[in-house]
Image (cartoon, rainbow, N blue to C red; front, side):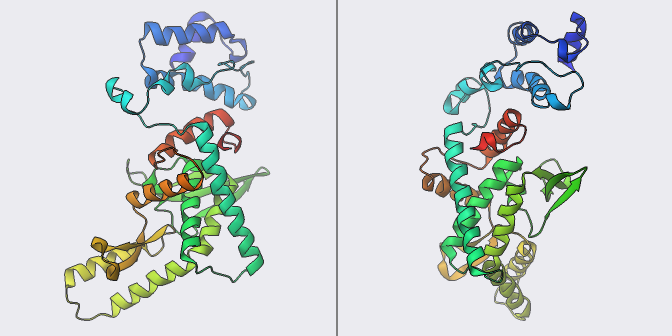
Length: 314
């Protein structure tokens, strides 16, 4: 590990002996001698951030915040590489959602979850809402909460199946896990550690999505009963897709080619997810162009700054 080797060359053997001057000199070394650009620099210095974030779990912890009153991403100059400017600087990156906008959007989504949990509490345990607009609001809010608190890619978030989460207690500590399929690197089924509020939100959506899931089940039965379809290939493809989506939690109604008469239920797509995020941002009073891929990067920042707590989200 470069930072540890660098300390070893200075004769520093314990993190507790690291002083601000050491950090300052190492940053200078990376910036001016190694000529690291903002994102590689961020990756190189992140280990120091982790040492501070998890100081309580370190035998000889750092004694002071390595960045003082600043933040790692500011020191690296990541905040200066934004939008169209990144193209000019040959730096490909995804924007981090600004803290103020993130706070506004997260609080709005959390308020929706609280409001709908209260409605379920009043209406009784067997109540399944049939109001489509309410269900869509719930789905959109839960998708954002899952995305921003887990660091999942969008295809992993919208691939979550009903009940694919669990709680476990180890040494008196409660851990909450969400399971999904990781496609990009071919890992297959993986689990993400999340705060309990994420599981609460998923359980809420499981109740609000009952009507649309029943609608999909009915379509599957009707498709399976059809003996002589007018277009056998299209019929079989639709049946296969419907069966594949039958356990998914994030569902929506899709009109093939914009034809309302051909509207059917299917798993939310990436495009539909971005449309959902656009609705959420506007409803929260934010003009930030919110997109799904921003959540994974913003999550990483929040994780580093708050020990995976809720603080940096609000």
